[in-house]
Amino acid sequence: MTRRLVLLGSTGSIGQSTLDVVRFLRGSEAAVEVAGLSAYRSVPRLAEQVREFRPAAVAVGAAEDARALRAAAPGWHGEVLVGPGGLAALSAGGSADLALVAVEGVAGLRPTLAALEAGRDVALATKEVLVAGGALITAAAARTGRRLLPVDSEHSAIFQCLAGHPAEHVARLWLTASGGPFRRRSRGDMAGVTPAEALRHPTWKMGMKVTVDSATLMNKGLEIIEAHWLFGVPAERIEVVIHPQSLVHSCVEFVDGSVLAQLGPRDMRLPIQFALTYPARRPAPSAPLDLRTVGPLEFEPPDPTRFPCLIHAREALARGGTAPAALNAANEVAVRLFLDGRIGFLEIAALVGRVLAHHPPRPADSLEAVLDADRDARAQAETYAAARSTS
Image (cartoon, rainbow, N blue to C red; front, side):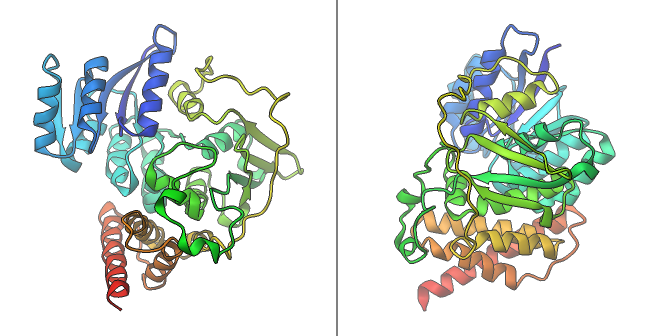
């Protein structure tokens, strides 16, 4: 039976890879019909996708984007929704079976909740959704009986390794990390890092924000929080290990000492396809991994003194409530300021740590509480950055 998909964030890296998978699956038993698309900035690319996939509805950021889309796709007569409310309406509306959420940052929280409440499964590529609102999202999934299918390569790997194993058999989760472009740099050498250097990821091609997060290792900190909510494992049993080849996507260690690892090529289309076709497996568009040619696989511990974002993330999860939402918001602001040239690379972690230290956690028991904490932390981060620039 054809699965109907709403794809939020269709013009980004994950969105474009998802549509590659949809093309690949055409004509198969696992074919996917695109019921909805959304984009925030790239209207010309969205128009190309609309002309190809003819979705029933589309969400854009602003009214002028809606007008531009209509002009660029004159033969298409679907519904155009506008703004954050439109994104949530797209996620919940129509007759889709699955919503794949790949919008950047905490903006994915409301539409994820909307999709679950509408009774559809969610394939989640936006880790910030669970970082900021993990309790809300997992409660909504439990209440509605819907599935959260991880799209991050690390969490997809753990999801696959856990299949058929009860929680009491799990000793630890191992999240692998490439180590980013500064794996061998001293902390002093990282002080003058430029945005261009931070955006040169050694193994993956990703969006700008997640690429900077990989350079600071905040990406792994966020993934610790995400894994906690996805798999119900406490933070002290979630480990990070540097694996520069990025071929072991993550591992599960069981109580008998056995470790199951998921290996595969460095291609996000694999975890995307697994989420789209779950629980079935289908031939994939990627070239298979040939173990005879991969060479040595290296593993080493991360250095939190050089990459303190790992410490901040664990602290936020330990404090609970709205602390992870504040961590995430401060990081989003700090990364933007770094990319704009307003703060240095090492100041990303410093700014996040300062906001987190001054955030009094509150219960994260409603969407409004999480979004309030997000707004407060963003404002505080901007204030700290402005004070630094004038001192």
